[in-house]
Length: 233
Image 1 (cartoon, rainbow, N blue to C red):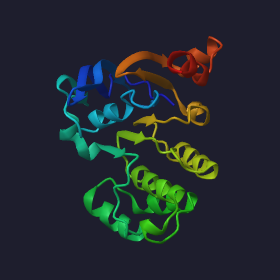
Image 2: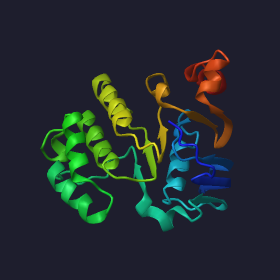
Image 3: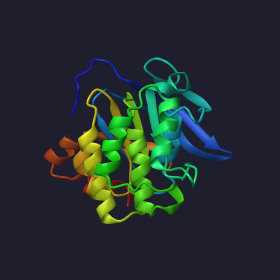
């Protein structure tokens, strides 16, 4: 899945983020490369969502830096897509209306690709509020994947939804993967998603405790799940 690029797409350098007196990220440094699918893993409160928000330019670090293609993520928002766990869509928004809205907001949005993804993910043509939780998650994912971005950030797209929906989402990720971009996926469903990962970043209490290639872990006789359990459980 790797493109073999000689320079990183994203660089975090000693990034520190906090909410009031709570340190959510503590001097975290890593690089992301074009062509990677990266698992961002940790238990609740480890700093995963904070890291994704910093990568998306939605959260400004107190110190350290986040650089996306040499600039701040805020300056390159048109080149990245972020799908958070929280519901942010208008309850009355239908897939057809969402496609019109996204087409007006983002030049890289493909209505044709979105229609294909909506059909593949079996998202019904009804208002968002009338969809099941699984259908809503698949709807949000289709909108994100229909953009041709260089950086795709997904925060818990598998959380709290049924097994069939999780399988469809994982298949859609593989089916739509742009191997010139970078995908960062935060999930608690490690066993189901680990086959996707080229690389895994483990966070604990706001600190990066392991940055490893998934294949190297497997060659050492450990799965990503086993490593997760040993480091974080």
